[in-house]
Length: 293
Image (cartoon, rainbow, N blue to C red; front, side, top):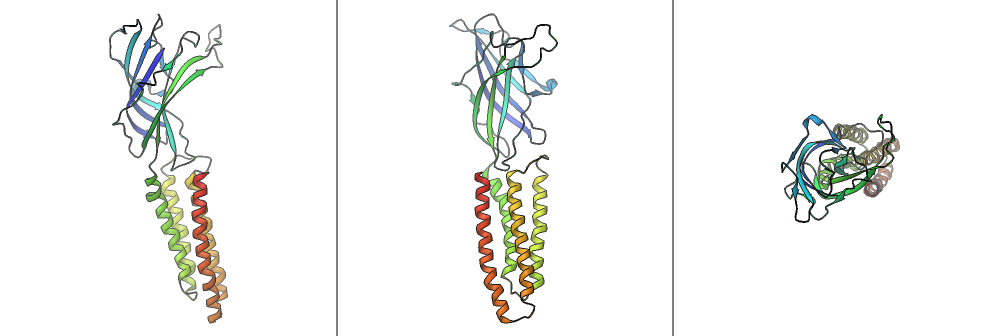
């Protein structure tokens, strides 16, 4: 049985609830007495009351080769657990899973119409780039007979259509990474002050540390609570270490200049410049490694 998919719109994508609304065409071409539409089930659909399935023809159309054809306009809310481990450079698969609720794979097997399936050129999702579409043929087995006296041992044929989306890299660079770099740079700027300005050399990195805490809180509010660190959390953890190291350097060198001797001041200056350079290098290498792995 041939089945095809053509996505028209995807909207109301909600990361916190792992749901989205999809508007798409789904068509079937088959031979035989089994009607694939009568017992069609969307396995990952939610809110059945808001689901619409509108056939284009009152009855399946008979094609010249003797097969039957029907096309449906599907619109509804679907659920797909999102993997946010690489946030904000994550990719997500927005899927629609089709399955027949009555016939098993021995009677009905879906074959994807890869030639004509796809998505509309006008398909766009605010805050996301549409990358591609994919399909997967599935065999779904259930460890329950659902109360029926004779358990069904054969798996059910299913097909999953996916629209692959990714966040724009500009969002990561300009809205998340750049503010963090500016705050770090302001903290490092304290080490370019004359060593005699002890209070300012300590206060500026401390202020930068507090600012980073608030920056992290702002993006954390945009994603659901998770039991692991996302990619951006790891970058912020690195930033915390760098700022704390800057504070410690300012505190330690403050003790060196208590005597206010010119030689002590030069000793601090000779330490400050390489220290900032090493921290910049650690930030660049660390961010690249976090993104790569």
